[in-house]
Image (cartoon, rainbow, N blue to C red; front, side):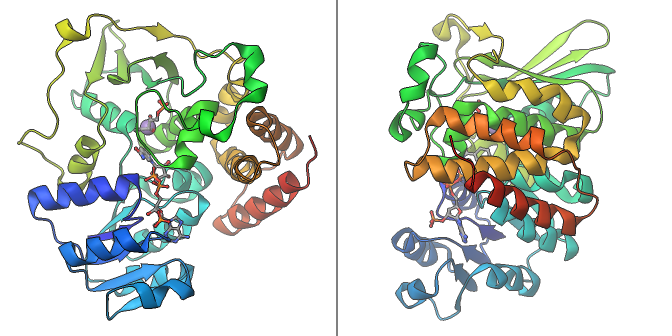
Length: 358
Ligand SMILES: NC(=O)C1=CN([C@@H]2O[C@H](COP(=O)(O)OP(=O)(O)OC[C@H]3O[C@@H](n4cnc5c(N)ncnc54)[C@H](OP(=O)(O)O)[C@@H]3O)[C@@H](O)[C@H]2O)C=CC1
Ligand SMILES: CC(=O)[C@@H](O)[C@H](O)COP(=O)(O)O
Ligand SMILES: [Mn+2]
C-alpha cells in the first residue's frame, strides 16, 4: 500500500493492521514527525518516502526521500501498488485522492475533506471509506432491503455537557478533550463544533447516493450507524470505538479474525441519545440546505480550515469558528462546476475568512 499520513492517528492504526495481517507497505508519506517516521521505515521497509519539508529530508533514514505536495503526487504515480490509504488531514488530501483515482488505484479514504469539497467530481466506485459511521452504514447495508433513512451518530464532542454560556471561553485544550475517541487535532476540533458530523453527512451522500440522511448524539460512541427500513424496522451497528475495524475492512475487504473485543451490553447498562441542538452547534442550521446542495461543501470546508487556523493561533474564540463558517456560507452563494473551480473557490474563501474580524 501507499500510506499517506502514516504518522497520524489513522496512519498509525493502518500500520497496526498491516503488522497484524502482514500487508506490504510500498510508500510512506508523513509530515513533521520524523522520529516516528524513522521507526516506521525500519519496521516496514518502504521503497520510497515523502515528507512535508525539505529541511527534514536529511533526517530521514532512507535512500529515496522527497518532500512536498508534488512529490506526494509523483510517488502515487510511480508506485506499482494499486492501493492508496489517504490519511492526510484537510484540503491537502484532495489532490492526492484525485491523482490516485486518475492512476486507477483503489483509495481507502480517511481524508473525508476530499469528498466534502469534491464529491461531485469524483467517481466513488474506487473509494472505500475509512470512517466509523460510513463503515457502519456499509456493514448494515448488505441486506438488499428497501431503506427509508440512513442515520449516523455523533459523540457530541468536547462541549456536549458544557453550560452554553461557558462556550465563549473554551480554549484549544478544552476543545481537544474528546469524550470517546483519540484522534488528530483538526478532527477533534471538528467533533466539538459538530462540523465533523456535517462533513460525514455529505460524505454519506456521495458514497451512498441521494436519500434521507441524518445524525443524532449517542454519548458512548458504541453505535456508529443506524438504518431505518421502509417496513419500519431499524438496525444499528455496534462496535467499540476503535478505528482498526473500519481500516481492516478498507484494506482487506473481508475480515474473519477478531479485530476488537465484542461489546458486553449488560456491562454497558444503558445508552443515551440526544438530538443535535443548533443552540449548542450553530453550524447545524445549514445541514438541510447543505444536503440539498452538497457541492457547497467546499465553502464550509475552506471557511472551517481557515477559522481553525485562527483559533489554534489564539486569534479567535472557539465559538467564532461556527460564526465564520455561517458568514462565508451566506456570503458565497455559488457552487463549483469543475475541479478547477473547487480549487479557486477554496482559495477565495480562505482569503475571505482570514480577513474577517470578530
Ligand atoms: N482519527 C480518526 O479516528 C479519524 C480520522 N478521519 C479523517 O482522517 C484524516 C486524518 O485524520 P487523523 O489521522 O486524525 O489526523 P492526524 O493529524 O493525526 O494525522 C495527519 C497525518 O497527515 C500528515 N500530514 C499533515 N499534513 C501533511 C503534509 N502537508 N504533507 C505530508 N503529510 C502531512 C501528518 O504528519 P505529521 O504528524 O508527521 O506532521 C499525519 O501523518 C482526516 O481527514 C480525518 O478527518 C476520519 C475518521 C476517523
Ligand atoms: C472515529 C470517527 O469516525 C470520527 O469521525 C468520530 O466519529 C468523531 O467523533 P464525533 O462523533 O464526536 O464526531
Ligand atoms: Mn467518523
